[in-house]
Length: 468
Ligand code: PFF
Image (cartoon, rainbow, N blue to C red; front, side):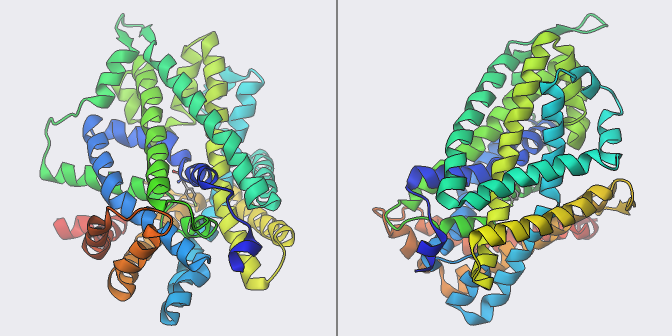
């Protein structure tokens, strides 16, 4: 049987930790906190939580049940149900192909910062131009990317059970311990700045948790909603074929209802704790203005915060970057696994051979992305504002253009072509029932398609023009 040839997760915990490993990544630790800070703290949290339980749950259920029921990767899964829809499998496969080219580049940056902190050079990392001069240098980002990629490929090369599952079993609990430790430490922080103002971690926590309804208009609420929606999408690793692949490795006696809730809980829990460690820390050392730093938060603002903490900052810095390195590795493993598993099926080749070939091809593509900051540098205006380089462009095509389209088509396929009952039947296998069937059905038939159209219009900048 197909599934047997590919290997599989030993049990439900193995699956939950591996799927959580894919879901918990840079998005949780870096993107979630800065969006929460920007979008009114508690208001964003509330909206996000409601979305996870409804929308997120429906998307995750679709992917995982589709994978388990067909026992196939995205490439073949759709076509095996309705041959006319095989194009959707191929389109879905494009997403991990594109993400793979730049995720290992970011992984390389994180590896670089981990080594900087581990070798006691934290002052260097806090300098203004450290990040820019590193990513624009010709050799160093490539070397770190290659090491990160080699680690990822090694885990995939070892296989589903001995590689991915075993790795996630060690790494995910360690990640959880590190994040809880840093979050508690962040709440005990206290600092008086040059103007004599003292700020505490607990005050920062209040900013994070208490909803800010000031100047809340419909337009602003819509922005919060869209931010939360796109974050959820990326954070759960849905609509990119990854959870379909992982779903195909799950045994029939696993209760998918429970496992899916656990993955959601893990992913949201880590995102929540990341906010609890980052927002108070930034608030204490940089005030409310520091929290608006956006994407540069992780590589530019946080090293400055660690530096202001004195000696403790070295330890916290090490813990932070090692933790995010773990998170990035397990996510990158899931992307590479999807590529490798699909190519194994397509070319009837062994895991070892395919891992090496895909690893080398990914390395070549990632070198090009690294060179996007020097040799191939250009500035491309992005629809959401600002100018982007190769990496931003790849990220935009995969996450903002392809993912909403794939998610929309998948929802139409499940909701209207094969009908939600097809998924519900699979959800009942190995469990007592599928309590969320009604809400799942409404989500996949009506809410997901509508929201995807809105998200797509927003990412292409058309929504702004339509609303005026
Ligand atoms: N879900 C991961 C995160 O939140 O960082 C990101 C991710 C993982 C994106 C795997 C894409 C992917 F294929």
